[in-house]
Image (cartoon, rainbow over all chains, first blue to last red):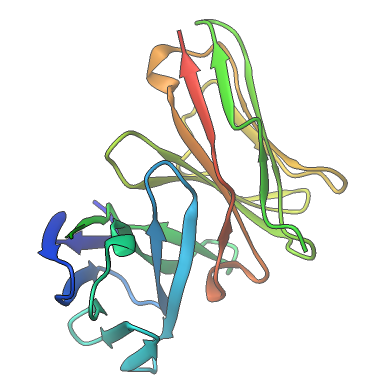
Length: 114
Length: 114
């Protein structure tokens, strides 16, 4: 199973509304990241939140992290058509060599209806 | 500072041929990840490399697939004797210090096996 799993798998909302996506993970982490992927393109980093942080903002994005529940949420306020994309959370997990690799969830496909 | 460069963007191979996918990380980055993405799915971790070392290849199929990141030159993902099931988008990402910092993605190589 995925280290990070997003829900819902798909979300459609009207332009101007807020969109909330959730991510759950299984093992302890140092940080959690959110990425966006437009159809057929590479992933773009949105925000990184460290395990000792509870909330972080970047423009219209708000990310929360609850390490006790092993979950994170991404809120996009005042959505725009250009926000239509897939959103992935990624967690770092330690390898046997002490480095951390990024593991991605399956993503939430967000559609903004004009 | 150019981003992560992957080439080719599109690659068509007949069954049984070899596919070579190249990834040049961002300048100064010595950590490289390879991921595979099937249509409508998330990213599946394949391999994590540092210069001249494979750190974690737990996501690599045991046969036909190999990866390297030499001291000089790009990282190479090599698929021998391709089969139709290898058709997917292959993304490369690089980071400065592994999972503790954001990863920058290339635009991907779309492999089609005919």
